[in-house]
Each structure stands twice: as C-alpha cells, then as structure tokens.
Length: 108
Length: 114
Image (cartoon, rainbow over all chains, first blue to last red; front, side, top):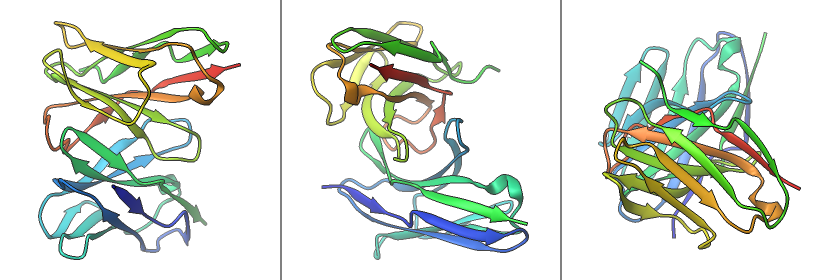
C-alpha cells in the first residue's frame, strides 16, 4: 500500500524556524512534493524533490532522503501568513498521494 | 494568464441525485486530475486524464466518472450521491503527466449532499 505520515499540528512563533517531517511508504516513487493550503483555499505548490538533498526556495527549503523514505519542509523567518496546512505528497505513476496534512499555527 | 477554473463553487444536492463538476486547466496544460478532499484530510486522488484518455484512477466506486474534452477541459460526474460524497472536489492541471511534479489546483467545488 501507500501511506504518508506527518505530524498533525505544529505551533511556532513569528521569526522562528519550523521543520515538518514526512515519512512515506509507496511503490513507484517519483518524487516528494509539498503543498500549502490556507483555510478555504486551494493547495498551492511549494517545493518538489526528485533526488536526495536539499532544495531551497526563498524562506522555504525541502529535503529528501530516498533511502530513508523521509523528507521534511523547513520554514524560516516564520510570518503570520504562514499559518496554514502543509501537505507532503508522493508522486506515483499518474497520481499524487497526499498525507493528512500538518496544521501550522504561527503566533506573535 | 488564468489559473485553473472550476464551476460551480458550491453545490447542494440530495442523496441519490447526480452531479457534474467542471474544470478548465491552465492554458497549455494537457493533464487534468481530480481530487476529493474531506475536511481535515489531504486530497485523495480520483482520476487523471491526459489527451482525453484516462491515465489513472483512484480507489473510488464506479459512481464516479470523468472525461476530458478536446480543449482539455474536464468534467467529473458522480451518480447516486451518498452523504459521504460531501467534500471539496479539486481539479488540478499540470504539464508533467507521469510524475505529477507540480500540480496547479483550482479553488474547488464544495459539494454538500443532504
């Protein structure tokens, strides 16, 4: 089967750094993606890792270790607007399998 | 350029009815996927279409069907609605078909089944 695990909730303060972990079990793995979704909004693409290592996009970075079936999303210099749900997703053949999401609450 | 557009934004149906949801992908995107998102959960894959052909199907009953048109727009049909079909239905388009490297989602159709 295919499954992804990520923490259900994370809390942090403005300006801090937070890491959201994701472990997965899947067949036909192509890459690990991260999406952000604000309440009432659509998921928006943040990052994609096809190979092991770190990908950096502004304040957001994503890491993948294929041998460990593990990845994480790192959010730096947290802002209030970063309060949202974050989903890791595994790219399989012709589909994307999402985790249940991590709800990030950023406090002043 | 317009993003992925979906219609309607909200829909209320009763059990047993049929519903059709519509999606227009980003210009130039030939792949359209449908996802169901229940409150508090991640999106769950329903279908992927590319060049009018079904390329992938998730674990959903045959009551769910879809098609893609020559202009790459798509419809999702659900027959014999059940209360459990109440969810946000998301359409996504992409350039990449196989790996789904980067999906662009529409704002979704919120379906309520009473």
